[in-house]
Image (cartoon, rainbow, N blue to C red; front, side, top):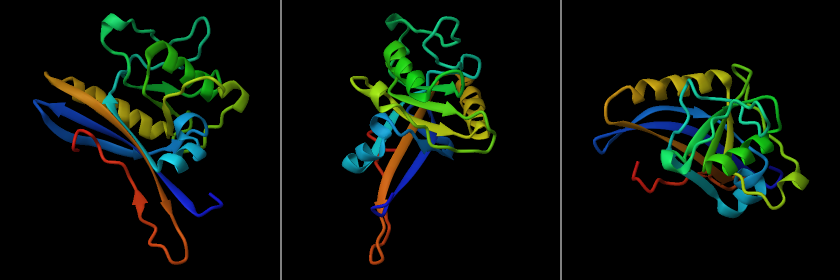
Length: 193
């Protein structure tokens, strides 16, 4: 930004089998300009970390738009799959509508939006008037190619008996000055990995 801050953004997949954790894949991302990933919120917190189970599979990913005919599967609390990270495809409605709907219908803590462009990252903007009074999950965008890799890697990992896939979304800040060292302030996981 204009004050010398730099931001890092990464989505990582971990496989947890019998209390052993293994990194599957990590890809760069772009944070949304609304909710907890908005620049003023990142300045205040210095970093963000979401470390929760993945709820979306390659076959269940949808658009997430809050309207009739949306392809988003709405979970009930007894299904035990609320509150994690969900992947959703770009398109049909505004980013803030899509992720607000995910927060309301699935209690998502994180949202990873897959871009329609194979190798393009972009900044997801929001509507400040639409955002007032609403909660949003930590929202990031990945390229279409990286999103497909994440989904396929997660799908392969869940084929193993007793395997659980965890998604980590990391956002950190760094301050750069002509005298500073530019070190990034990245969060650490409560899980120790």
